[in-house]
Length: 276
Image (cartoon, rainbow, N blue to C red; front, side, top):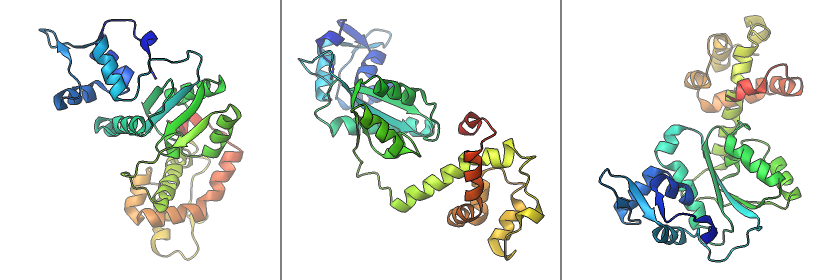
């Protein structure tokens, strides 16, 4: 929550208002067109909001409190999308607004949002969140799905948070339907994508797959096609187009899981290279 101590000026520009509310400038312009907020404009079209109008906007979004303890721990809303196209289509803003509207008891809210892969643990806002937790600054973390924080190892993260008396609260958006099978498929495909650069690029000389070593029992059907084309294919999309997503996932699980485990146990490459 924000309070009077957070507002030091009498007038705030569009970008400053966006940071307070946790949305983009474009979203504020859409709100203006819908009549949700009324900005003052200069002759040059510059938008601004008075302090009183900003307080009204914060109250309307459950982000304002008249009395608040300065030393109180914070509630963090963390939102993430994987691509800039998703952000452009408003997916990131919708996550933020959904969590704000479904939680009316936010205390000292901090909104952290970013674009990046759930496999990349070097994300700036994610790293900032971890530092806040380790400094005992966070009471609760609100997310729409576990994979918004991390694609794998969520329980490790939860345990770390519990050690610092921080709760992770998952508020699933019922409008976003994700089946268990779909989530599992996404995890498998993401794992393949993260290691494809290593398996078929970074260590191509050492791990070069020959016809002799790459033969699959039976030598028939789609599996044989995959074996014969592994050296030429460089992306998950190409493999998926060749044999289909389900068969590709089955092939990976059956024939490459042990290889991936070996690489995880004895890595001789820079993990940052495959997380980029």
